[in-house]
Length: 314
Ligand SMILES: Nc1ncnc2c1ncn2[C@@H]1O[C@H](COP(=O)(O)OP(=O)(O)O)[C@@H](O)[C@H]1O
Ligand SMILES: N[C@@H](CCOP(=O)(O)O)C(=O)O
Image 1 (cartoon, rainbow, N blue to C red):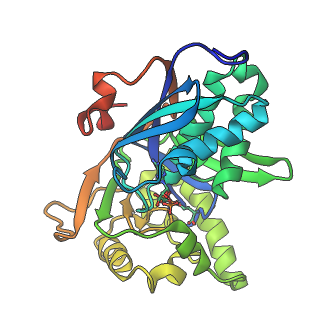
Image 2 (image 1 turned 135 degrees about the vertical axis):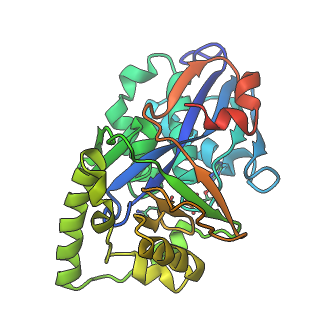
């Protein structure tokens, strides 16, 4: 084993996340009980990546894989350069659906790299992991809940991203509606205008503040607290089915929003009994993940390799 590196494999479990939550664009996020499991170890040469579950047969291998790119970025920060890597991914988070799969891959890569380096936690502390992961992702609202769990409020200072996590009030039960079709976050971000009317910004500030209260103390206020004017309308043209489902749910009194940049829909209160979204939507009732990413020593075991069951346990 080259100097600087821990002996043996490490693994990490990272949760799906839903960002924005309506008015909290690029700031608010929620960790959900659906997970990717990833392991990594130092090899004498080369980069070998195996993927099962979501993205199998589609994602690039080797150094182009997002987990590996994120590991490389973290190794650079740590000043440690491994001769080779073996990475195994068991993915359950649907990709390019607005459920934070890219943030999960980035957080997994950064945490795995840190765990493989001797004294990694001293050299790259938790705050530095958040800053690096947010830098790689481009916005902090998914990486924060993925790392910390629960409901997070993230912001960016000149020195980088910071976040706090808050416990969600009893009775908030997320339901996620996931369509078959994909939507890339980069494309949805390109649909946003450079400026918005002052009235819309003012409304958003008030509703985002109310949403923190509603989610942590008074879920009865979730419907007015999830009104957004900063991003959803601008993206609706590219996501007509998503916009239609959000409207239908809200008209039924459900606090529904676009999940992240879409195309999934997040409902923060339960849809009425018998509500049918239609055949195009997979409906997932997910618990809130309160732990965030968890690192352990050793390869993935039988439980982590189960493509379905293990994904729902927190
Ligand atoms: N587990 C993963 N491993 C490697 N690459 C991934 C993984 N998850 C997502 N990605 C990459 O990120 C892209 C999706 O990112 P993005 O558009 O931000 O959507 P999401 O809302 O799922 O984060 C995928 O097309 C893929 O290139
Ligand atoms: N604030 C971002 C959130 C993107 O989340 P994702 O899960 O769709 O990557 C945005 O709205 O662009």
